Image (cartoon, rainbow, N blue to C red; front, side, top):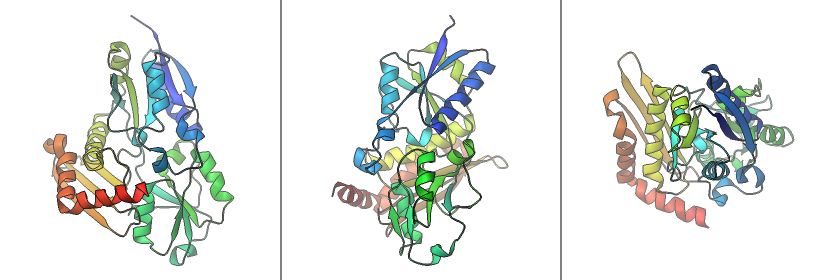
Length: 307
């Protein structure tokens, strides 16, 4: 059987870039494709912080519905936007080779603001908490919209800078000269990775996407998302996680962090283990954090966000 694989995507420049990347790889394998772009709730409602919208699935829900109703066959997502529990009937079919995992600070050419009271913008609770942990005398304001919109808002503002994922800006050639790598900031679980989902009963699309899967990225993002899922329990929280494979000795390095919203409290964990331990690593390390004060911190985070 042969069919045209309908690729669903959000209609932002970055999302379309991701969809076209998947399309090209499928076309190179001989598959016929069609891109179908839709606007998500997360792109439309820009006047509220993400956590107030119920962040889980805000950018993926529209595509999930399109897939479940048969309008599209597969959907391409920034993996960090995808809830750790996929809707019934939808499965992870491929994780593409990971790009840059770092967060970066885009500024206006002068870094003096870092040493004094200043304002930084980000729409991410994780970035906000880590920034305030390092710069407690700064103010963090909410920044929403696709990357183009956020870059324009930064230009039009009096802010010292704004925090972005390096990968997103690099993919659409929007990364300016005035940036610094925030290598001290623990990235979002699965940051820099792209996930493609398909219907569980769609063997044709799953077989096509199998060829696009990068096993190392799949393993590392599995660990990070398992860590996230175990800590969160369905609640939005400032959580960072990064797993890396060391080819020289076949080990996995992992670093995870849970912070209070204001950044004043944080629990970190860092570990290097044999690669064979990957399947339960995220769960095990998240449990360790929960047992060392993480449960109380998560309860406080929920109370803070409900105010």
